[in-house]
Amino acid sequence: MVHWTDAEREAINTFWAKIDHEEVGHQALTRVLVVYPWTQRYFSTFGNLSNATAIAGNPKVRAHGKRVLDALGDAITHLDNVSATYAKLSQLHSEKLHVDPENFRLLGETLIIVLAGQFGAAFTPAIHATWQKFLAVVIAALSKQYH
Ligand code: HEM
Image 1 (tube, rainbow, N blue to C red):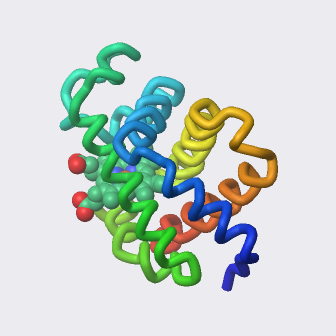
Image 2: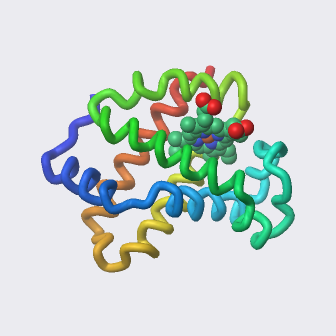
């Protein structure tokens, strides 16, 4: 089981409370789709993803970004039980959506970049490290049902 110190729990929860799910989710997902364009193939039902402007203005990308961030909230409220919390979601991404789990890492990376951009110096190295750990736990949990 992952061990979280009080300082880590505090760093995750304090920052989480400041995050606008729709905006941050939208920006992180937009960056994944622009910076790693092969990820677009999973979203063939989303309409126009033909360039960075189209992706950023696509309402389905915005809605889905919020959905992903809302799901991260489930992990935050179950920090000691992320694997079980994400068991069904992992199964969905593996068996139904066939998302290569490497892509979870890419989304984690763009999320960190968006948080750094939004919060600047307040996103201190210590808070960055804690978020990196949190996302590693999320990625491991989402990757768990892959065989
Ligand atoms: C759907 C969460 C990463 C591709 C979903 C849903 C959630 C979610 C909550 C909706 C599930 C449902 O319909 O019940 C997450 C989280 C991620 C993550 C928490 C990582 C932190 C990714 C990545 C990709 C991806 C990296 C692909 C590059 C998809 C697709 C759908 C989906 C294609 C279905 C979209 C639709 O047709 O509406 N995800 N996801 N996900 N996810 Fe993820």
